[in-house]
Amino acid sequence: MAQRIQSPSSINTFKQCPRKYYYQYVLGLQKKVPSIHLSRGKIVHLTLEDFFKVDISNISPDYYEFELKVILHSLFNQKWQSFYEELRKIKLTPEQLDFYYEETVQMLNNWFSNFLRKLNPKVKELALQEAFSIMKPMTEVHFISPEFQVQGFIDAIHDIDGKVSLMDYKTSAKELITQEYKLQLAIYALLYEEQHGKKPDSVGIDFLKHKPHYLDVNSDLIAFAKNECRSIQEKTISEDIEDYPLNTSALCKYCDFYDICFKQRTIHEFDRTDPDDTRV
Image (cartoon, rainbow, N blue to C red):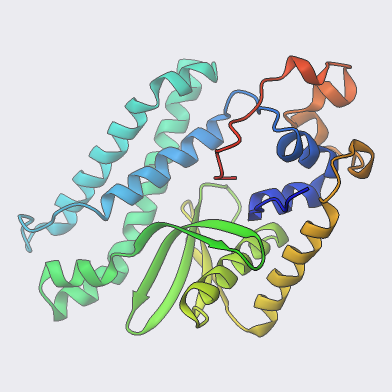
């Protein structure tokens, strides 16, 4: 079988439960209706991506904080409305939907406050447009490694004062770089190094409810990513379900494939994912 292009998500899925990996990535079974957390994550990512595309040439240098915040909220409301059908399928009560809406607004406000703390000193030294341009990252950058057969979408690449940092946005409640997040960041660092011939200075998670947390990029972090990429390729050559054991845990009841493993629902009752959908 040809090597499958992996991702931080697919590798972490295998480490969590090889059987879940088999259903999702080998058979291509479609996942359940999106959760509010997944849908909200997409909305936030799109909002921040578009925020940095805004033309600020007409923004007043005297009132830029207010005007930028209005733009951010407007973009978020547009994205939230555009996800109406997807949000409706989640079948939340109006009260629950309002809760997640307000909580997401608070996250974006917190992110914006953190952003201003970095932007404001630059504005004191430079014109607003120049300062904003310096703070503006490259967004949603897709890298793929032919050598290690892994890909990733990096939310933001900042190059400020000669220091390069790769950032991923998370809407999770806890601000902790778990082993899963460490692997994701290590792979991003590997992809960047392979693409640019040099390591980024740091990689991090911006916990939007809290603040960014960073890891310095060194040879050990890159080696960790390489070892995990080699390991997943060795372990996923087979297409035999018996080579993907079920790892039962308290997380099973939240799994998209719980019914197959525990309620005898057949594989044929599931739809298949688009094989060309490589963002995994």
